[in-house]
Image (cartoon, rainbow, N blue to C red):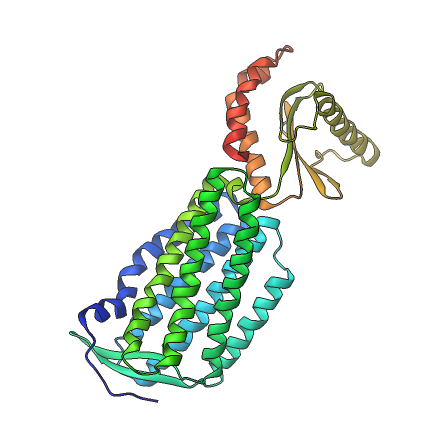
Amino acid sequence: MLFQSHQPSGFAIIAILYPFFTITPLLIFLALFLVHFKKIRQKMFFHISMLFAATIINQACLMFMVVTSQEAAAKALFIAAQVLEVAGMLVMVIVLEAFEENKLFSPRVAGFTAIAAAIVGAMISGPDLVATPIDLPITSGYIIGFGRRDMAGFLMGIFPLLVVIWLVRSFITKRKLTRSQHQRHLLSWLYVGIFLAQVTGSLAPVLVDSMNPGGMLRELSANIGIGRVVGIVMIGVAFSRVAKTPWLLQLQRVHLLLVYATNGITLYSKRFREDITDTDVQLLAGAISAVASLFKESTKETSPIEAIQFKGKSVRVIDRGTFTCAIMVDFASQASDDAHERFVRDFETAFAAEIAGFAGEISKFEQADAVAAKYFA
């Protein structure tokens, strides 16, 4: 369907051409997260990189759509942009699921994946698209949208709506579980970004198009679409903070952080529960050491033990040779493992001399509270 060409207003021209200006910050975030992924090989940063890559290609499709003189090409670019938008939404769901609970697959992910697949199927099966020619100062092109009763457009409206409903419930639940003001600020910033990306960037333009296909409200749709990029950038800012302190996005509980020497003496412990006593700490240190020794003797295995799993609890162990660090958490995740490894690295750097010359004095290790607070506050 083709509507009569019209000359957009000055503000509408800016809105239509906004992808030309948003590519640069998106590329910066993509490079940043690829570097993080290369350094620590954490899947979260790979998924976030894919989110920004999909958004960049999405914006590129929108850029070429408004400057192409071929209606068929403009429609093809629009379909590609919508498919990438759906892929980006799905990646966000996977990131939030995988990073918090280390689950790459869950009923929610399966459900959203099924809807995404239905949208892609509707997209490639010939959707009813409305093409509005536009005359820009230096070129001409098209703004493409869905017809009023098009199934692909309907699904494109339903998908972000369902994501938003899930996000609102998720935000309320997670905010109740936050343990610090820093976590609450990060969570609010992240969810506002996702809300902008989904509601103003994905849902609202579809609703506008369905109410007024091909009309002047199409300019409003283009303006609203800017919110998607703003939201994606906010998500990038939030996860760049998480890259430095991964525990900020973890809402699971850490129960105990324990460092003990090769002779079994506890060098440092941080109790995150009031019911854990000094005796419990000593018993746990002895138990971990005994289990590791028993396992090595019975299996003739030389590599150190890395985890002891209980129902509802997990003890992760890092053996540095001169000392061992154990952490008890509700469940192991990429974030908890990363925070654990960073703590061990900083502890080893800060107390290398004290560990090498350890003669029984443990008070000097109390300064490790600052390191623990950095990663587990």
